[in-house]
Image 1 (tube, rainbow, N blue to C red):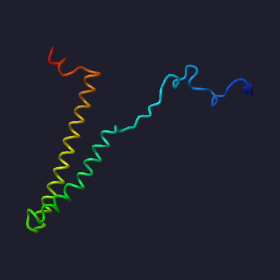
Image 2: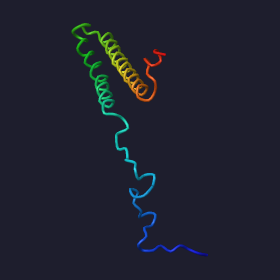
Image 3: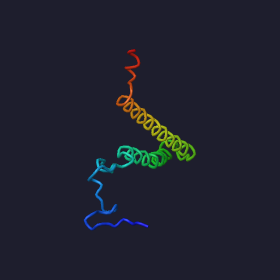
Length: 118
């Protein structure tokens, strides 16, 4: 049975440098960008703080001044305000998603104006 002898000047497979030669990784740069953009994280944190601060503050600001001590109405207003923040987040997310899709269509495919012109 014949075996291959490794000569000391010759590099083993583990010692070879990927930047030299025709390996697949020779011309590629590694992608070290975060998976989620910073603007998305900032929006999420802002709406999270809004979900905490707005309903609680609306409850305590209105329980004695607007509703004269009736905590049921103040609690209902706090629930409505929490839903308002949630609906606002949904609208912002939908608007951001549509702008991303328009950017992809404009860069790689036909735009809406191109279809109308035909």
